[in-house]
Every structure is written in C-alpha cells, then in structure tokens.
Image 1 (cartoon, one colour):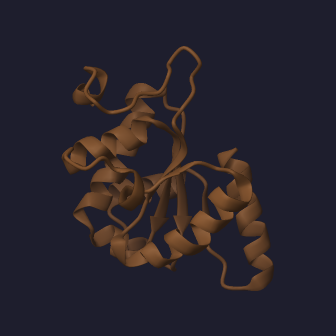
Image 2: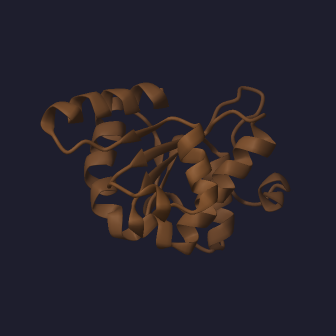
Image 3: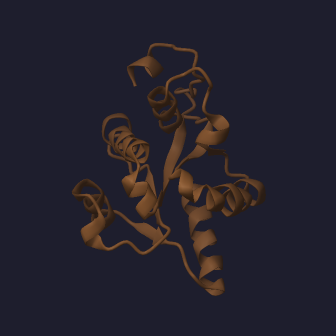
Length: 162
C-alpha cells in the first residue's frame, strides 16, 4: 500500500471525484479461470458494462505480484471473491482476500468492499476462521445450479456492483 500511495508507476484513481479505475477486482483461483473468463466476464463486463480487473489481463508486467494485487484492490470499488476449495488452498488468493479486508478497514471506513460468491458448496468446518467470520457476518451469494437461479444470481450480482 505504501508503494501505491508514494506515486509509483501504477495508475491511481482520482480521489477528488472518488472515481475508480475498475468497478470490481475479481479474486479467484487459477483453477476457476474458466468460469471467470467466460461467464463472469461475458455477463458483467460485456453485457452490463461493469469494468472488471482480472489478474491475467490487467496486472502490469514488471511489478511484483503483491504490488499488482494491492493496486488492483485499491483502484476498484469492490472485490469479488470466487470462493472455492481451490481458492482456500491458494496462498495468493488468501493474500488478495486479506488485502481486500484491510482496504475495507483502513482505507474505506469499514465500508464493505468484499462481495463473496460461493461457487461450490463448502462446509463451514473447511473455512479458515478469518474467512468464516466474514461469511457469517456479511452477505454473500451462492452460485446456483439451475436455470431459474441463474437469472436471479446475475441480476443480484449486477445490482450489487453498480
């Protein structure tokens, strides 16, 4: 975060207008990229005009990963977490989750910037305590397994991000 504020070569949002570069940073495990790069990207960005930051597409080459992550979170209004077992096992996903929580607490006056999408059924016992606390205290949305639920899911997600 210090690198971001100190005027490094990373694009910054205009604090006077509270304008962000992205509507949402998408935090996901690489194993879940198919869903993110097809359905999520198509529905949110192409059909609804929501600007997404994806690490495969928007991270700046040459910057270290931690700098790219903190910059992406800081320059996005929300962080969408695609919660799966792969996500829970990934070091960098946990880093992204914790950085988004810190952004919420220290930079945004406890405004909730995390939007959890539970992509697969995960038992409560399998969540680390710091994530379980967020799941239990904040709203989240489960990805549906049926056609009717799909319509409601995408409508709710778009509404939450606009």
